[in-house]
Amino acid sequence: MTEVRGDVLAEPTTPRRQLWLVLAVAAALAMAIPWVVAASRGDRAGGDPGGLRLQALRQVAAALPAGADVEQRTEAAPLWGSCDGRPGTEGWSTVLVAYQFTAGLPKQRVRAHVAAEMTALHWTAAGSSPSPLGPVLEWTRDVRPGVPAHAQLSLGQSGPGHAPYWELTAMAPPEGKAASGC
Image 1 (cartoon, rainbow, N blue to C red):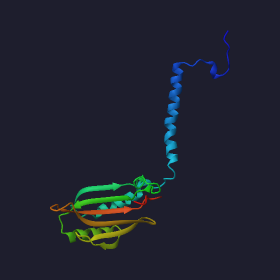
Image 2: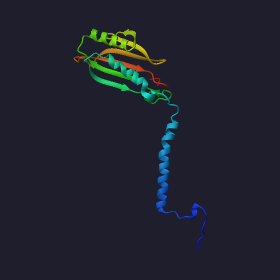
Image 3: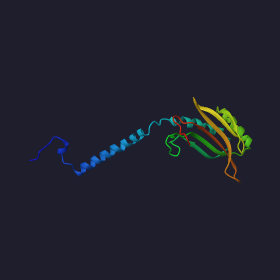
Image 4: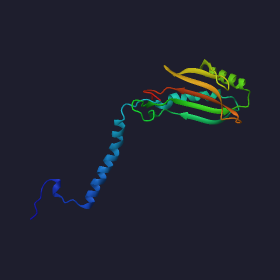
């Protein structure tokens, strides 16, 4: 006579039932691990919620001269990181938009065109700084209330014998904690 108990231990465990138990536990862990990892990272709110800062910086493309040949376009939304993995330097990277281009116009004409267009886009001239290839023009603008952005136009050259190129760059700080110490 077999004794019948009223709990789950009374039923014999089959290999099939063990497999289902292992699969159920694995599925539960697969769903829980991302939540635990995210929670262990601490407060990382910020960056560029909704991409609003990046979207505002993209507008500088309208300042490029007509017929400009854009050789490289860079758009960098903020990423969470640190300075070479050093503790205490964690934070969000800068929001960045950069256009490297050439234009079949004299240098002064490119500078004048970009300056006029940046003014039309509500950027305020912030002076210039000297460089071996000519002045670097600078502008500022709040891309959101209290969030200052910085833009600059500079002339670069890859090396002797290479044609010069222009670079129009705009950047803004991330929302939340910015990476530091680099």
